[in-house]
Image 1 (cartoon, rainbow, N blue to C red):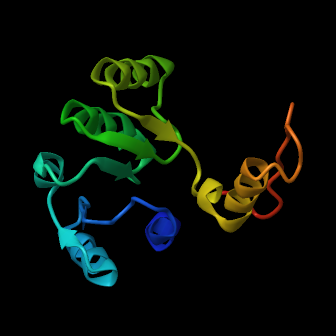
Image 2 (image 1 turned 90 degrees about the vertical axis):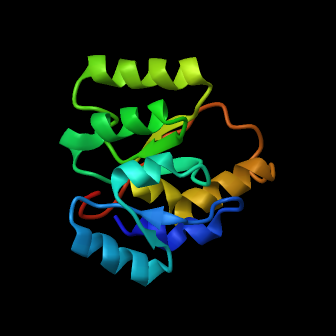
Image 3 (image 1 turned 60 degrees about the vertical axis):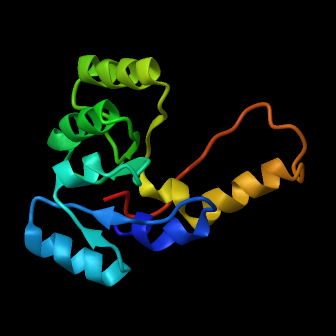
Length: 143
């Protein structure tokens, strides 16, 4: 989802540096669109200036890319699912933990305006101390 790329500037401390794709043509298109470097996956993972990998690959590739990124010392945020099996998901969690890295997985709607506003209201104490919560997504769905 391009929501991540469009909204990256809204979060302090995040600067887009590069992108990679299995399609060199798409890599070039996105790099030009967002004013970032177009790299291959190996080059992206080897870049010491990159701290965090945003994994937007197809679900079947999530584990391999995320594991490679963690192994390269990068924090990882991946689209859902974290992995296609519980065992692979646990391997990612273990790898991140053993390296002291952050690993996250969520739909991009979490980074949208409603989620950010809800977080700000909670952080500001506007609703008191939350003790439980429920969220609903009204619309045609994540995909």
